[in-house]
Image (cartoon, rainbow, N blue to C red; front, side):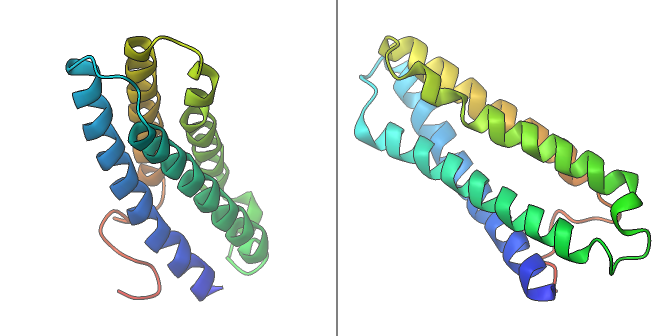
Length: 140
């Protein structure tokens, strides 16, 4: 179970790295009115794929640890965290709806979706007890 939480903690940093990289690319592409290229598409796909991976790891941890954590499934913050993160994943997948849109609109909407997903992630992590921002559970 600790291994699962450790992977969940590590993937969080990969999600943030992918998001920051995508935000920079999308912001420059939008500001410079560039065509929506393969790099922008790839970064968006990597971000949403990592969000999916993070959700899967989180769901597995939620289910497996539910009986072993005192309070388990009944802890309100666990349900709130899960709900917010589910919404973050949904928002992170919204760019798939804009594949046929003009490049400028696609850049803007994709950028806003990734930023929106990050806001939801920040809110969801803030619900957890203790300062979980800088630690990798299971390592330090």
